[in-house]
Length: 217
Image (cartoon, rainbow, N blue to C red):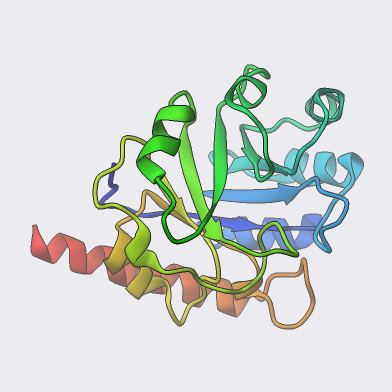
């Protein structure tokens, strides 16, 4: 499933001020990380403060890695998330058990059957395709082989993994994802703090890629 206007998610926000500034640039969604091993992890209290200050029509996405059901419910009691994003080994029944739409993140490797993943997670709002890493669950700053993504899939694709202002336009040309998701690629040294100039450059490059798609219609 393809989108002629590519949605943009900025993930790994850690402060109210930075999140508001990023939202003000016109992104579609911001991501909050609830994974203790991530340098971009936020507490439920900080996430609640961020979400409560965000303007309308900015989606709030919560990222989890192999959480317990109680952990997710505790977060949802405090934080008004619009979408859940699961980056671990979670099964479809678990992901769909919170009365919230969800994305299932897949670490893409050679020989992986993404068509089968679409069947397995058929109730998901989409698949988030990320770079495989032995030591991290996202935020690696490394790209994967975009040629591994089939041209036709039954679920919307959110493309992640090493995206930056330097490569996101080419990535969109290659994959035509529904949305793109960036974290480290718009940071300038300090993890969890987004460089607004890089965010703006990223947005501009997405718009450039979308403009090329329209010219081809």
